[in-house]
Amino acid sequence: MTEYAKTLPEHNPADVDSLEGLLNFLGDKMSMWLDCCLPGVVTEYNQDTRRATVKLQITGVASLGQKIPKEAYTDIPVFMPGGGGFEIKYPVNVGDTGWLIACDRNISLFKQNKTESAPNDYRKHCFEDGFFLLDSINGSGSNDLTLNAKENNLALKTSADLTINDIVGLNGSYTITNGTVITITKGIVTNIS
Image 1 (tube, rainbow, N blue to C red):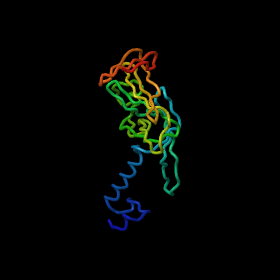
Image 2 (spheres, one colour):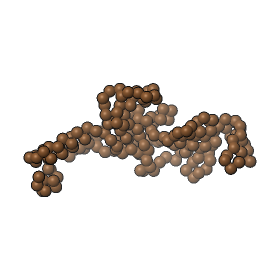
Image 3 (cartoon, rainbow, N blue to C red):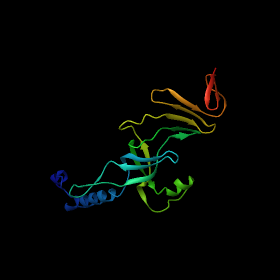
Image 4 (cartoon, helix red, strand yellow):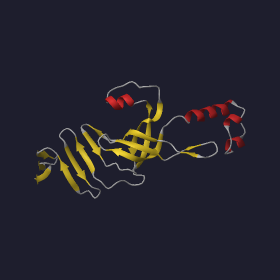
């Protein structure tokens, strides 16, 4: 293969009379059908289900250079870290940016049942089977950050300036590691000792 053929912008690898050119062309064509990870923007969000509608911010490109907008993806789970009975919840607002990440296989049955499931069909690497990872590419909303302990329904809500706005929890006393006891009555801190 000649070196100039690799650098021409209008170069089509299939035009090069070699096995390498053909394989490069086939590889490029096959990868065009795989979704992986692209930036997106939240256009709708359901706080109860933690699912979003996400509009991708990178378009397709036709052979003559025209932009081809991609459809919005609906019912996309928004990643919120959690484990061991704890989770971090944060506000998701329309206009928030992040990354739509495609899973390797169809996860629709797992999304319904939350149990080990076989793929529902042979679909692979599609954004419909993905999740949205928020990223403060353009900043984030000004609502509360919530740190949550699911087992005892205790949650600490704080704003961006780290002012504690609310401690939601069962009535009772909670002991912090350093021995401090916080008493909560009707979801409001009534005593710290």
